[in-house]
Amino acid sequence: MSKSLPLLAPVSECCSSLTAEPLTDDQSDRLAPVFKALGDPVRLRLVSLIASHEGGEACVCDLNDAFDLSQPTISHHLKVLHEAGLLDRSKRGVWVHYRVRAEMLGDLAALLGSAR
Image (tube, rainbow, N blue to C red; front, top):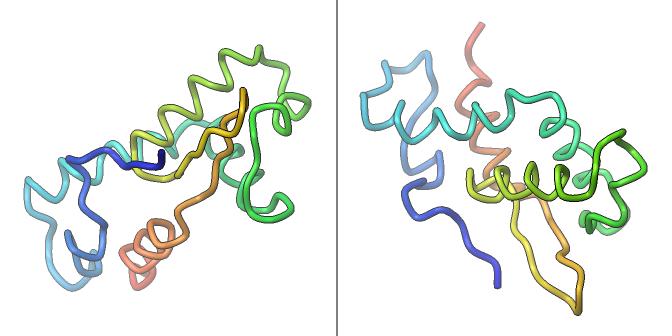
């Protein structure tokens, strides 16, 4: 049941390093939702919590205590991260488990990595 938002190609297919050549309008349009999703402190922390969680995945029940937010609010943030292509998800019973898409983070790191 894992899927990514279709309009977002993997960053490696979209762009080289920011310092190698300027981004096109299309590349910027595809990358902006990813950076926007990571630009929220709660979502950035969620990515970190999931990536560092035992086994590299977590469900909402594992994340609730880390925030002073309701479960539906946390679920909304997880949905935004999933739609931006940063998280994969799978449903198991009544719980949805999330895993960080390491390749997406690696692509973003490569995109930003040589910018000095």
